[in-house]
Image (cartoon, rainbow, N blue to C red; front, side, top):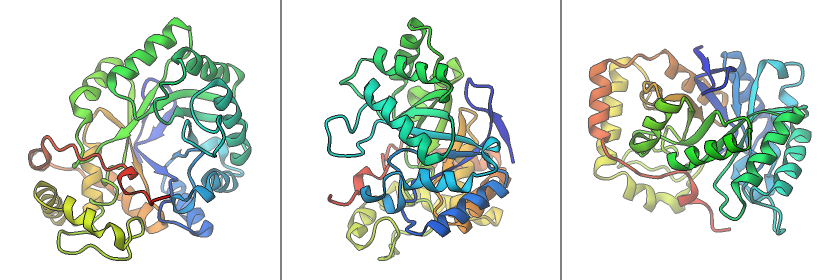
Length: 333
């Protein structure tokens, strides 16, 4: 296992994190096995959020944190936990957002579910333009001072928004954020435009989520074969997948398969190895639902792509900006 500094923070983390979205997992026992398999494989970073739960169902909000708290009994100090706040967790007027009220309330709920006294990295899940950044980052810094969180991060921010956040934190004499979590894959290279140069200049770490482009690069799909029983999409999403897996996306998938064959690896492993080949990326988040998927994803760390293979993958995917973070495919509810 490879360990690196978490962005500008001194804490060491594995280059692959286990994400507990559990979008395709309805079974707590299987989820527990996935977490234990990750830990046994040397992974020490687990990415969670207050809204995560089995099958990405609002009825199961918080179940991922509850499961993680149960599994980590006796080994909490060996694991770096991230969690998030901002997304809606109910119908009330204060059940979402980044107000001081919501942040302070939700961190206590997350701590209780996780059965711990601190969250190692607490991230704002999305931008909240209805609340001043001064209020948001003062609240987070107070939590750092209280010892309830160790570090601060943000998700789904553009480079200029991260720079602005750091400026506000500096004005408040608050601990600066150490990482940003955004989507990055062979099908979505948007981060390279501004976030990569910003990360190189500032040292802020990048957590790449959706490195398999919401499953499109998992190896389970081809332009000709889109299973009806796909865990996340189901038969109603066949048309969307069929549209996406045409043209350049199909060319990318074909090249990834070619490289995978050369390494005796899987499509998913090559897609993640390509993400990890970029020095700007601190961590790739594996959204595995099962122990077998965890093992497969950890195998990406053992693959060394040649310079020629990286160049070929770069060329076939150059300029692609398919923003497939799951919101495009949510159930109508």
